[in-house]
Length: 241
Length: 174
Ligand SMILES: Nc1ncnc2c1ncn2[C@@H]1O[C@H](COP(=O)(O)OP(=O)(O)O)[C@@H](O)[C@H]1O
Ligand SMILES: [Mg+2]
Image (tube, rainbow over all chains, first blue to last red; front, top):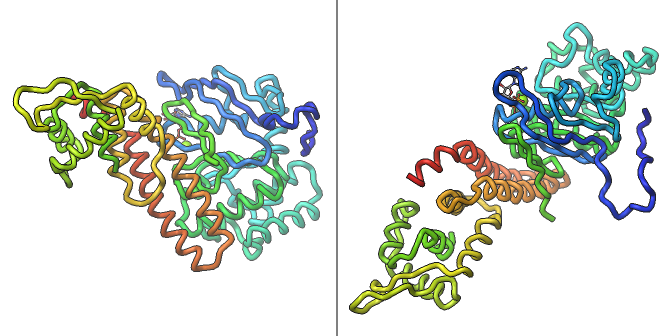
């Protein structure tokens, strides 16, 4: 898969861009009560979409379905017009590794590796040579203003530093979509805002879309628009202009 | 806070005397600030002039307190429009938002809709402030942060209310 978007009829410029990633009418249950009950969401290239809603409403489940981590019981998820359910497991993990990046609230860095090695890891898994991978990882650590923790292990960094390392790791492969689930949930407000600023700036510079799950309004204010999830159903709000 | 819209909303349940209307308002929304009769009658006469209410029978005797008022179709449209239009995001809006939510529930309209459009209006302002903050000096940042924290407080209240709509509906329609 390539990183540029050249699909679509050149004559339909006036149409809003088709979503890069689109979920339609998703249903998912873990037990008797549905976690998703008809949720959907379209993400266009380069946009930052906040997914808001009360705890337990299905935000994370929606994100996991969009990212191909979970398979919905019903409904479709399409990335560049290809249905995720039509892909094999290998193809789906390849997609996640090359096209998607992930930032979670915590616990995503490998504790035994240095921060530099953590950031280089996705590149190494894609068979990039060690030296080259680490050089790129170092650039990303610099970009996120945490070059000084390169040789430390995640456990030796502060929460804010660790999240910046996690953002560097999510972006190092040049993903087209970054999934961030409460990325600032464990940070104080100053650190949280700085992480958001760096994440959104880097995403905009690389034209990566961001699906940002958050219940914090000041974090959602870094998005371009918001989707509200309630009882497993979603509503995409039109931004006011 | 728009007293006119609130009175119109209360009239949707049926025609009332000005006095009943004041009582209904004070019971639901007037805990801190009950209405003066004067306010009720000036507001009603303005609504009457604008065709949003009409007189629905006058009892024997005279004086304004004898008249019953009914909401007109134009009045219903006006309430509808007001409920569907977000308030300009600014601090200390809670009372207006509370009134809108209660009236939506009382009239069987969607209170989620009121909250959703308000969230979007607030977030739009918060996005502008966030951008200004990113490009600004320390003074800009502090000024924007002050506004952002206040708007965030509104939104927190809004989310809490959204989570309690079921209970609120039971309470107000009892
Ligand atoms: N792996 C799981 N096993 C069982 N129930 C789950 C699982 N994941 C989510 N749920 C349930 O699904 C609902 C939605 O959860 P989730 O998507 O995590 O909500 P949110 O992220 O909005 O807090 C909740 O009721 C939750 O308890
Ligand atoms: Mg969650």
